[in-house]
Image 1 (cartoon, rainbow, N blue to C red):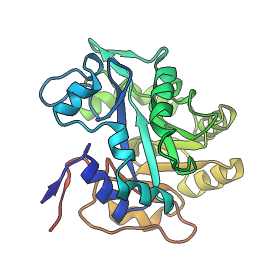
Image 2: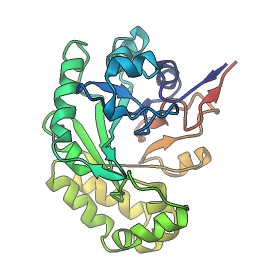
Image 3: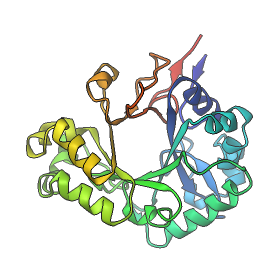
Image 4: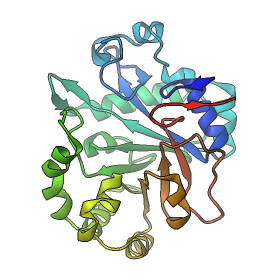
Length: 271
């Protein structure tokens, strides 16, 4: 059987086999929430233009469906961590974030308030800091760096890297961490290429990064890209697209191992 990303079944499985899961949420036209990574479904439905029920009828899970699942509730009460990524609206390739954070917070509160679940292990991520600011008063929040425009498409990874290279090399990790603390974030998550790709020569070593983050009381995390690297970077929250090897859990005192979208980018085959 294959479990797919963006499904309650896949996320439930991820919670059972890892220390937590990451998934993406988007706002519908009626200001409700569905779980989905892209702004458009595989069938061509533009999420921001559809109602939650229309999308649910086409297979997208409602956020409340996920939270009310009995196994999910038990996992959260047992200390498993949810990283919820807030996604912007995209209109004709233009990124829309103004006012969206407040709408996200109102929609999320209306769902979460009725679950009776603890807030401690509900955390929020976004490439767009304006979306996070509406959650930082009550939840642990983390910007993902560099702050890319998620609504643009790039012909290659190289072209995307060249577009954001000035942002990457123009600001030290120490400055990023300091800014995160000043804005009330719980830490910073980095795209893999930021820490381990060609730009790593501009940044402090892993050891220095860990020292800085601990001095500032901040978490740091990344997607290492290869699960065999996880033991070498124990201080990081380690997100993983490679979930076929499971279960995987952090040791005592280590950063947690998080299943990206529950079952990785492409899903996972299970017996």
